[in-house]
Length: 494
Image 1 (cartoon, one colour):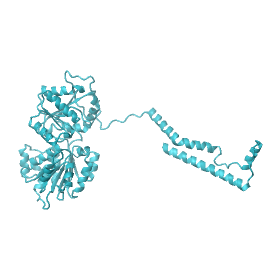
Image 2 (cartoon, helix red, strand yellow):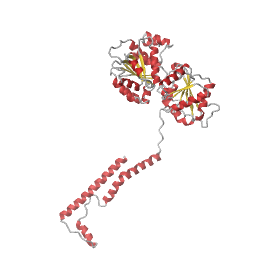
Image 3 (cartoon, helix red, strand yellow):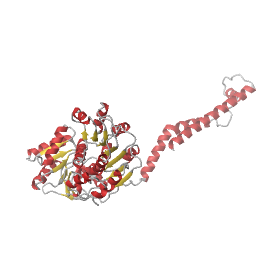
Image 4 (spheres, one colour):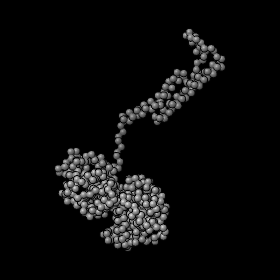
């Protein structure tokens, strides 16, 4: 199959050919026909498989072949929501690349930069608007953008947006949009949370998937080097210098760690720059541009940039620190081996990161090959994963002794809180025998007289009978209360 078979317009085919592509990727071949047909689509595929073109191409085809609605300005016909600034810029670049032969107006908006230039660009309306949720809400609150003419909504990297806490912003944005629209959700994974969100967005969707969830592409050669934590910088420097790596994307777990690593690499004569959330947008854009141009040899990034860096033929990705979330490993190494190209992903793993490694290997369902670097043998080597790649951890075997002791503890606690109180009442009540009338005053007086004590004046028989009834009633009530307490105690245990 080639792109012409998908039914795309001639200007789009010319732009695709200019980029050197002849055949669509599997996700493009499956998703594009449904998008062109106007269906809502939920598409899942690995990072680096061409998801962006999977929705930009058919959207451009639709917008260029339908007349632009007349009406007020500041309108957007297609809205693409992304979780990060880098990913927004990447999508915008894709739209401009494939739409170069079309009369399509595009705008990209995100935070971290001045809002006024973005407001000016939205005047008169745009065909495609790519935005991060926070900045889009700001623009809408200032009446800089409207959605009365919106035709298509795209959630790109939907799983990442939920991970970053954008769920409330997304719901606020959905309320602004017209109900009649085409909805597209593209993501590496579709978790239960995403499916719950999808129920409020898509209508009768077509779901397409080309690979198992959280799997890595075969074109990426994965390995890890067991190393002491204090030796990681020396190992990274040695790998770069001895192997003459010219373009290396390194992932650090923290912003401060990224800055520190850049300083250490610069001190060793290795050109490096950092990109993370504390950097201004101008600094992030400059660092990424210099890295793409080859002016900077090493780009150190945090996970905020894991899905927003799209570099053709990126040969090397290094995990200086393993990610806290196993899924981020897939997205990190997905920066290399893109569009069928080969790549290498190396992780520097210290012994204290073994649990993170196990979670990653269980997620990708295979063991990452272990390697050692001469001169940097760790004190504590990393054990193998024992081939256990199940999705969830096996249930722990039941400990009969532990269960019985726990049961005893629960019963003891219940007895102490409920049964003991009812037991005390039962014990006092049983002295009177619950269903037996209380002794008469005459009987008590006889016993007191025999003991030489003062005798109380006699009452009438009716009173004695009444007293006996009252005693019986009190005994019965006490018994009922005792039974009620016992029942409550039993309910507590159960």
